[in-house]
Image (tube, rainbow, N blue to C red; front, side):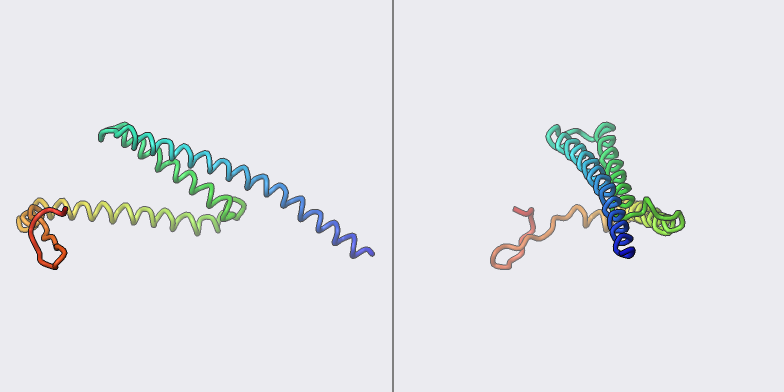
Length: 148
């Protein structure tokens, strides 16, 4: 009989913990939904307003990127359960993530630099950029011109 009551108490504690976790998951899901709707509203505004290149357009793009990073933090913290983990485990995931982002930025900057230098110093490449690509027609014959 004693074993049965212990099992009942343990079972009750499990459900009590799950109830609090469910409220937290719903709260975070609503929070992420609101952030997503704000991102979509900004994106639709940028699309409909046809904003010219400038500070305001870049500011809105940066704001969308910041909101995406904020959402990524919440997803990792709550749905991947890192918020309640010990610090060393969190660091083994976060530090390589920052290095990965840094690598992407570095490779994009290096590729852009290479492209700019190639355009500046390689006359053959500039000549090739000015040529139009041959267009294939239905019968397989190639004709130089624009794509229709």
